[in-house]
Image (cartoon, rainbow, N blue to C red; front, side, top):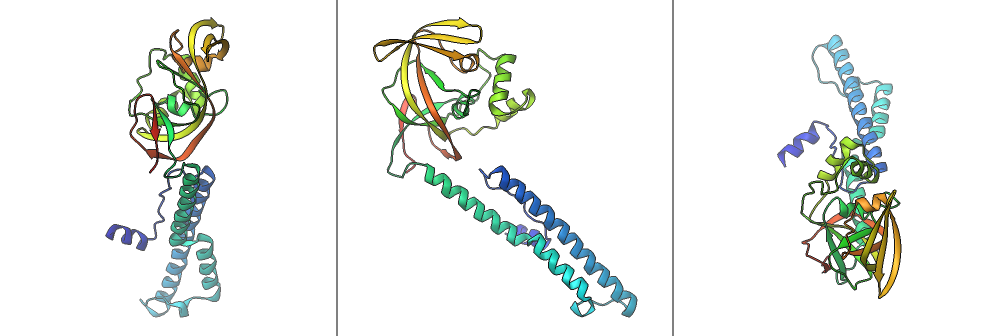
Length: 277
């Protein structure tokens, strides 16, 4: 408590950003902080100039409003308004954090609403929530599931070590999926949250892999789905993010939705029941 009081007295704006803050908000906050610092510096310079002027005229005295010109007082007022002040910045931070939390809660099931969840190791959990062709739409498992519909994705505690298929080609695919270069993507994966529910998808189908044919850029899967044979061609990116050996099962997902804030939860094997209550 004492440290915080002294920091405010020193006029140093805090730079703590609420988790889940939008890039626009972070940029706006940084601009406000820079403006506040410039304003504080210029106000201090005006006061120092008044102090020097008083000392030159009457010796050491404490400058007051009476020694300031109208122009100096007007300038200080404009700077204080432009800088918004430390308290205004912190109030904006709290308001933004409250908005993020409210939007996050609205996207979650109600306390009594129970949904199915699936624990997936990172980075594959996050890849399931990456939209578009660079993400992962198929999760492979050794056992089938009868569940269809809403499925929460839980990032397990296991730390990724690259896996058996890790090479430079897969590194490039991960970099494209997460929007990083080769050097930055591994650091990004290492910082992904674990032991939390990070979003949800719609599980639309489950099928057994009967066989897999290697293509130039991908796989042709021969599936047994609901007692019927089916063929599905997947891209090289999708093939790199799964284990498509015959006898395993594919969980086909759609509509990835990442939560703005992860929810701590303890994972289980298979498809399990989860409620935020």
